[in-house]
Image 1 (cartoon, one colour):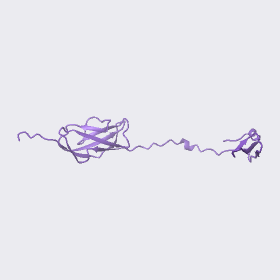
Image 2 (cartoon, rainbow, N blue to C red):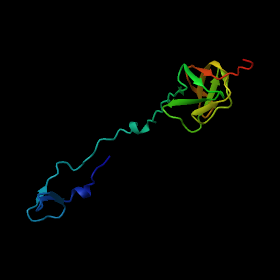
Image 3 (cartoon, helix red, strand yellow):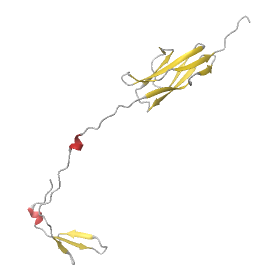
Image 4 (cartoon, helix red, strand yellow):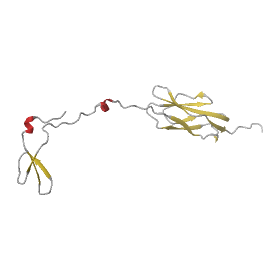
Length: 161
C-alpha cells in the first residue's frame, strides 16, 4: 500500500502554466503560481490482485496428423526397377526428434526415418497398400495415415515368344 508520510504532507505544492501552456507542479513557488490544496493527507491505492500472477500457463497438447501426398491414391506407377518414392505431409510441423515409419502391405519397411520422403525398392507388380506412422521423441506413435493404394506396373520378360 502506498501512502505519504506526514513529513511530505507538510510541504506546499504550487502549480502554474509555463510559456507553452503546460501545467507544471513544484514545491518552489514561481510568479503566477497557485498553491494546490490537498484534500486528504493520506493517499492510498487499492491492493493489486496477485492471483493472476500465480497461474501457470496451460500447455495444450498439439494434435499431429500425417498423410501420404505421393503416390496419390490409386495411382499407377510405371517403373521397371520397382522404385517408389513416398512423400508425406505432416501438420502442423515436423519437429526435431520425430521419425516416420513406412509400411507396405502392413509390413514395416526398414527403420523409422527422420525425413519426410522415403524410398521403396524392387516393389513387385500389382496392387499395394501404403501407410505411414509419425513417432515422437519417445518412439510413441502420435499420428497414423489412412491406407493409400497404388498399382505397380513393371515390364515383364516374355522369353520364348
